Image (cartoon, rainbow, N blue to C red; front, side):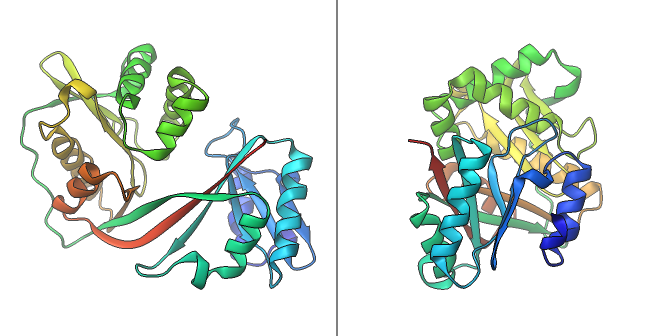
Amino acid sequence: MFDEFPEPARSQLAAAFDEGRTRPEWCFVEGQARLAFWAPFAGADPVIVWQFDPGPDPAAGAALLRRSLRETGLDKMMHDISLKPGLTPLVDRAVEHEALTAAGFVMEVERLMLEWAAGTDVPQEPGRLTYRPARQMDPAEVLDLLMRISVGSLDHDTQVEVATAGAEREARWMYDDLVNRRAKPDWFVVGHLGESPVGLVAPDDHSIAYIGVVPEQRGRGYVHDLLAHGTRTLAEAGLQRIAAGTDVGNTPTANAFLRAGYSEVGRLFRYYWRAS
């Protein structure tokens, strides 16, 4: 089935298969339309429409989306359209947008795509926090911390998952995602003030995958401490570029990235489909 996709999608699908993140039965082709589903880590259910090419006809793309969702029996799915600043899917990816909406997808959130580049000053750590690798802590303690961070979160995905699946399930999924990222074991850390956990930051092999502060410590600037630590970790590992993203409406986190030397490089438009 992977051979039905042109390069570089074919090689990317083969690599994702080797990592347990896609399967041939998650790939669909009909005429010029093609798509593949993708899971964030081995053993997880697919969560995102990946390698979606609707071809020239939005109706054909929508039909393929509907068939693939029906045949796999999924009850929710996401799809991201990434564009340069100032562009919009309605105009600049019109066929893809029309195919998604005709298949029942709704664009629910717009995200900032951010990047730190080598040559930019590495943010200084204030020294207020000490850090412990999350993998060396009791998983139950980290799960509890993730549940606490989800309370009052401004992140749209977190809000949706807490409302529909519950905070515990959302935290378990997030924990499994973060510990399966491509990262050195000590990169995913929990920041402590004395003996009390303040928040966590999880760099992976190319990005800041997750960052969060517990509700009772918000408003005190600890997101800057955590982000400085995560950015410095990757910069000292030799990364030339560090990717990150946050919802446009999550102003505190967006401001923290900009203050740390990240710049906006694009917008990500996230579409959701849920079984009725």
